[in-house]
Image 1 (tube, rainbow, N blue to C red):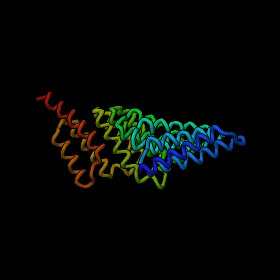
Image 2 (image 1 turned 135 degrees about the vertical axis):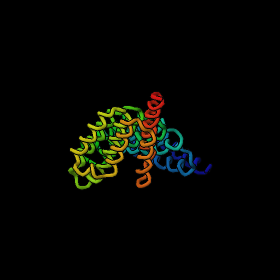
Image 3 (image 1 turned 90 degrees about the horizontal axis):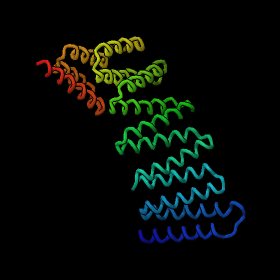
Image 4 (image 1 turned 180 degrees about the vertical axis):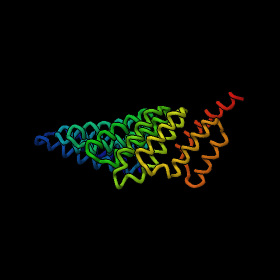
Length: 286
């Protein structure tokens, strides 16, 4: 480890000496960038992530001096991958630099990819507001490049986070938009019932029986096969139990569905919220 760190420092010194010396225009920055790459590799082998990231940032600056924005952006991504080991904040900062450079040179797909990656970092940090912002940016950029699958993946994340933050109308709007967009796509239409279930659970959390029943009608109009699915039956049973203010019936509907198709943690969390609110109403009546 110490040997690799010493090698890294030696390559870094050579790079800096190259930058202070004389050279053909642009060439000294390219030569220094190569030396910084060797330096960063040594620091990575020595698991000195902070130094490796700092050297990749210096490499990025060399590429900017020679107007090689794509290479500079890639160096910032390399820096971010090192920072991920030690500092989410620094990783995000480096990725933002990369995103801005990819936008400058019209590489929208790459910019979208790294916006999504920033969103994933914030998700791991449980910062859902910032995560949602970056997934929205990623979705917009993927949309401009017509990368439909990635658009839907990012939008679903936005909708899920919106629901977790109790922004249910926003979540419903996004989920229904995805379903409408997917229903006529031969590859995506089979996922529509799951999307409509997510939307319906958000409606359940809003607690408005009329709105829930209206939503079920909308879903049926959007996908005439939906009323024959277990997803529809769950939502209809939950709506009926809420109308009757029957917590036991609400719980039984969830258990029945879960015994056949396991509910993921996101759905479970939201349904627990709805059940808690329903129980509070039931307790107030007794």
